[in-house]
Image (tube, rainbow over all chains, first blue to last red; front, side):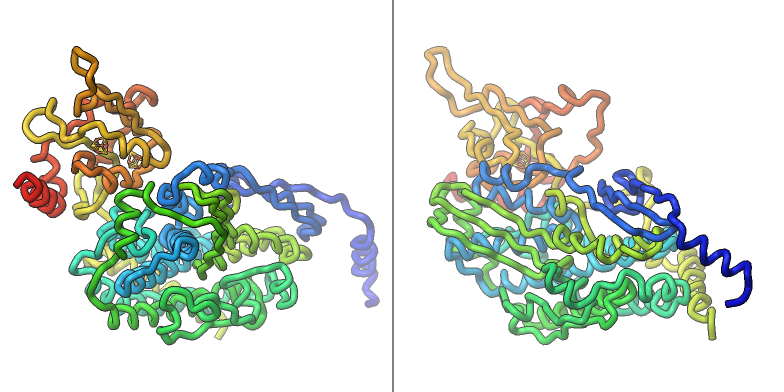
Length: 386
Length: 167
Ligand code: SF4
Ligand code: SF4
C-alpha cells in the first residue's frame, strides 16, 4: 500500500504495545456464578486466559464419604442445580450397578421423561442466558423462563420441589406421578415446538446474532476429542457422540431420535445444536408418554432401601455410572468397601471438563467474545467447583 | 435482505408485548403477595411434627431414625424419661435447625410412625439467624387437622393406614 498514513499504522502495530491484564469475575454478571477469568489482552485481543475455579467449592466428594448411600441423593441435586433430575439419574444408575438393583418398567419410563424434561429446561435457559451475554438483555431469558416455569410446576407436582427434586431412588423413583401428569406432558410436547419456532424466529436468522456468533470461539474437532469434551459442545464440533446412543442406558435403546451435530464448531453451532436437541428431546418425550406402561414405580428391594436406608447392602467393588446429562457426560465413580457409605465418591462433571478448552477457544478473539464463548460452553459452578 | 432477521425478531417481541394485555396465557406472573398460586399436594419446605389430640401427644416416639438418616444431621432428639429413669416413648427435646435443613424430605420418608411431615410454609425470614431458626418441639408441633388441610390426599392415606394398624 502506498498511502503513507496506513504504512505508518502498520509499523505501529508491530511495535510492542502494553499488555493489559483484566480480571473478569468472580462477581462479573456474565460468568454464570462465581467464576473468574484472568485475561491478558493485547489491545482488544485475548492472548492468554487463565480460569480460576474453586469459589463455590463445597467439599462435595469428601462429604459424601460420610453419608449413607441414600443421603447422597439430595446432595447430587446441588451439583448442577439446573438439572437436578439428570444428576439423580447418574447417581442412581451407578449405585444400582454396584448393588445390582433392578428397575421396574414404569419407573424407567418416568426416569426418561424426567431426564428429557430436564434437558429442555437446561437448554432453554442456556439459550436465554447466552443471548443475555450477547447483549440482548432479558427478552430471550424471560421468554425462556416463562416456558421453564411450566416444566418446573410439573416437577413440583411430581417431586415436591421445583429445583431440588431428590426424586430418584435406587430401583425406581420416589412416588408415582399424579393422574394428570401424562396429559400435562402431552400438552408441553404439543406447545413447546411452537415456542421453539417463535424463539427461532426471534434469533436464528437475526443478523446481529449471526455476526456475533459465527466463526467465534471455534473448537476444532481434534482438540475437542483430545480434551475429552462431551455433550452439545462436542457435537457442535461435528462429532456425533451421544451416550444415550452409545450406552443405551436405561431404556434409551427403544426410542427413535437423531443426534444433531454442527459443522464449524463455533458459538452459533453450539447454540443451534441445542435448539435441535430440544426438538429431539420432544420426540423422545412423545414416544415415552405413548408407551408408558402401568405398574410399580419402585422395585421391592428399592422400596425397602428407601424406607430403611441403612438396610441397603452394597457389596464391595466399584462402579461407574454415566448418563448424557444436558451439559455432557455426567459420571459417578463409586467405590464401596461393604459398609453403609461410599468409600470413594467421584463426580465426573461435564462442565468442569468442558471448561478446560476455554483458553484455546478464546485466544485471538476479542474480549467481548470471551463472554459469549464462556456462555456457549454452558457451565454451572455448582458442578465445576463441587 | 439485510436486517430482515432483526425486524422479524422485533415483530415477535411486539406480538408478545401486545398479546400479554389480552391473553391470560402470555401473562404468566401473579402479584405476590396479594395474589398467590396454589401449591401442589407434595410441595415441601420444612418438616413439622404432627400430633393427634393435643400438642403434648406427639405421634413421635423418639426412635431417632429420622435424626440418623437426615443428610446434614440437623435434627437432634433427646428421649424423655420418667422419674425412675426409664426411657419413655416420647421426645423430651426435639429440635430441628431450619437454617441447616436442606428440604430433602428424607425424614418424612423414613419415619415409621407417620409423625414427621413436610410443611409448605416458606415465609420464614427472621432478623436473627441462630435462635429464630432453631425450631423446638413446641414450634414444630402441628395438629393433624392442619396437616390434612395442607396435604389432603396424603393425610387421607395416612389416616387409613393408621386405622388399619390399630385394628
Ligand atoms: S419423627 Fe418419626 S423417625 Fe423421627 S424420632 Fe419421631 S417417630 Fe422416630
Ligand atoms: S428435610 Fe432433610 S434435611 Fe431437613 S430435617 Fe428432614 S431429613 Fe433433615
